[in-house]
Image 1 (cartoon, rainbow, N blue to C red):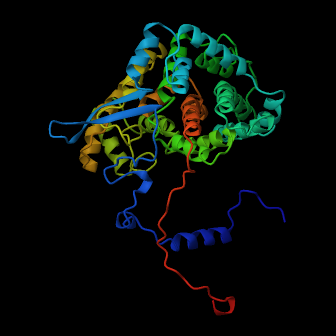
Image 2 (image 1 turned 180 degrees about the vertical axis):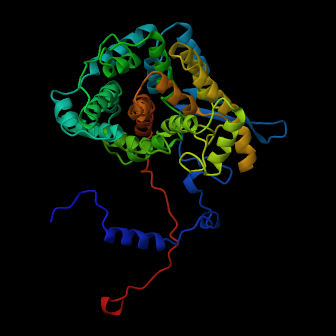
Image 3 (image 1 turned 60 degrees about the vertical axis):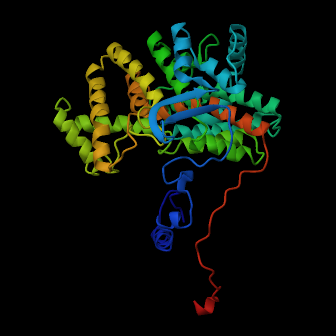
Amino acid sequence: MNRNFSDITPYISQLAAESCANNGIVPEMYPQHNVNRGLRDMNGKGVVTGLTEVSNIKAKELDENGNEIPCHGQLFFRGIDIHDIVNGFMSEDRFGFEEITYLLLFSKLPTKEQLDRFKEELSYFRSLPSSFVRDMILKATSKDIMNLLSRSVLALYAYDERPDDISVENVLRQCLQLISVFPLLSVYSYQSYKHYHQQKSLFIHLPKPEYSTAENIFHLLREDGNFSPLEAKVLDLALVLHAEHGGGNNSTFTTHVVTSSGTDTYSAISAALGSLKGPRHGGANIKVVQMFENMKASINTKDKDAVKDYLVKLLDKQAFDQKGLIYGMGHAIYSLSDPRADILKGCAKSLSVEKGYDEEFELYETVAKYAPEIISEKRKMYKGVSPNVDFYSGLIYKMMELPPELFTPIFAISRISGWSAHRIEEIQNMGKIIRPAYINVKEQTPYVKMSER
């Protein structure tokens, strides 16, 4: 009998219902057993699981009485404030992603000669094995670019003559190669998707060695390969801001966990991609854009009271996806401000002028003003709520006409730098395999013979 591979049969539905009915774990059990669900304590602070020098987040400071109070968020790459990093390369009118990749990997800022040599190495590695695009991307396309990106990373294992060598030297070589080819894998996967699933023309551009990572993304993506200087600078800035974030995020933790088993680089990075693919992690900026599209279709967005009413309905699960969330607002760590959002806000404003999105940017600013007040009142939250990086990044990508299917892959193109730094750090300090403990709450039950069930 021929069956659809994706069919959910009535029998499967019945088994799923029984599985849910048999689940005896309820939220109240976590504090009873002193379990920090999601590796966060009752105050929302992350449970410490390791040491790192790669990056750090500061969202609280001590007052005169020694009590922790919220402060404006700060992000540090290898001890250097992200604002200083951004001001540094932007004041010199140059791209920053390659520089901060060097910083994350080697714990120091490069000299001009070191950076030039590093960019040459990345450019040298920015090519794929012969027939790889045809055999691995075009012949096995997917509706989800992250899925195809992950599969492509795993496939590269077969083309590596030393795939399981986890010496620092070999892992660094593998990481540099992956950092270099992630734009190719992502954009080529999108071109394949667009051709086979949307019946659009297929074109594959080769990367330009003189281009930065940001410039090559536009060059590979657009049929004419053209882009404005502002577009390239803003995308480069977005790559910098997404490259690393404190080491405590889900995909970076995944990198540490999988690396601690002693496995190969391709498996570790593919696992991180699987984490980032989750809508709770890498897909939030898509939700922000979709939420605003729904808002514009539902109300008169020039009416401030109508906007506030819509935000209330979002929290009451009466608008958009009925999840009770205002996407792009709030963060697990930051409260008063997300430094990445603060930086992107200025870029979004400049880009809105160039692209003719002035009114839409004003709408974002209206939501940014009222949403924290409404969330604090409705949720009785006192830690503070502010726009996060996803609030502006989705708008920026939309203004640059980047397809939504590439929003999360662009995140991956950036975050591979941080993952690589953490993988190398884990290998350098490798001790025991990371093996968390779970408390079993199911009582011991005797086995019942088939004839007695």
